[in-house]
Length: 300
Image 1 (cartoon, rainbow, N blue to C red):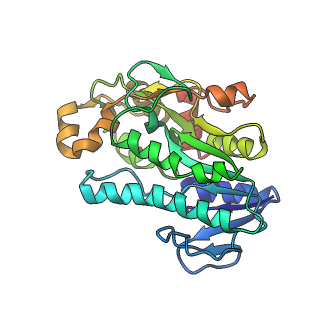
Image 2: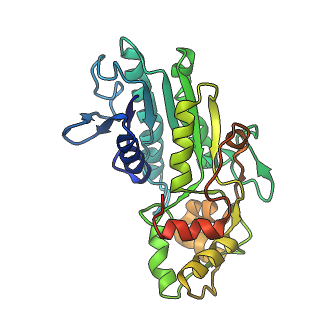
């Protein structure tokens, strides 16, 4: 297959591209800087991505992962505009570029997030659950709706509702390693809030699985089968690093420091991968303890 990948220098995109190339795929990395070998320069802020009509001709599938980081920093009005544009506008641009090709790609794996469900409390939710409330829930909904023109044109679109990706290379886990190694780790708030997580290895495996499964389309939760509470994740990380984790960060302090963003740390999302499991995907890391250990060891 010839596969185009956006955000190809990010945590997931770079690992996916490396893995695909190693397995013999022809990978076209879409980059914003001047393109080198095996790359194509594009402008995700441009309506057509700054791409010619033939740019994606001959490409079998597109994996679109672009999006500015949700954290750190407060969600000012300006920051919210960046978060929306980097996701919705870039998705619209890549879809237009796909549809402009004489022979459009047959598959689009488009990034989304479990934030789509909003705060689910202790209730487990799968892909049939309704859209929740809040900034991230609205953002994820509009992000997915940007793929509708591709679906209408007959392209198989999979909306990747990803959980927190665990990897020592980046994401949420990397900045936690130093404070935990110093014995400064601990739960946030009550610690009872659920976190829908997935290791980088399983995230890559799920995307590879979805590229090959012509019968799967629409929203798919990319999360481990057993979501963990914040306290469980804290204990697993402390145990893997052989350090104590007795600190508790008060909810009020989190709200004061982060404003609206604090709702994502204090809220609870218990999403489960019903469609992937029903389709026969086996997860390498289903429980948080072994998953944290594998992520720290950079096993994928």
